[in-house]
Length: 138
Image (cartoon, rainbow, N blue to C red):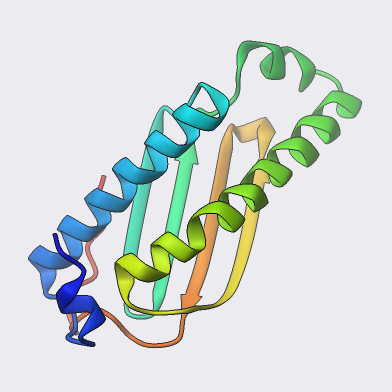
């Protein structure tokens, strides 16, 4: 999907929202595969009103799975993966803003190595979806 509709401040209909979610999902998966050599087993992107949520499950490497068996190792992996998430944001938020035609005002991260889960939530400066466009892309 071209970002023209989003950049012109037209709100995304259901079809355009799903397409953009899919494109962002593929982009994020390629980023992690390129940077770390492994992406999450499952990535989900949800765009709803003025919120973008990127979630990943199954991202730990075998050595990280071994490390999280101790509380010290769990702390190390959570800390390291939080840094990876922040670097992802630094590298990718400008591209995401361009794709969406909106600026990220606030963002938050969650890394839970014990559950093999991470999440990046972004709050945009405007609503980009039409009312009723709230289903998730898997």
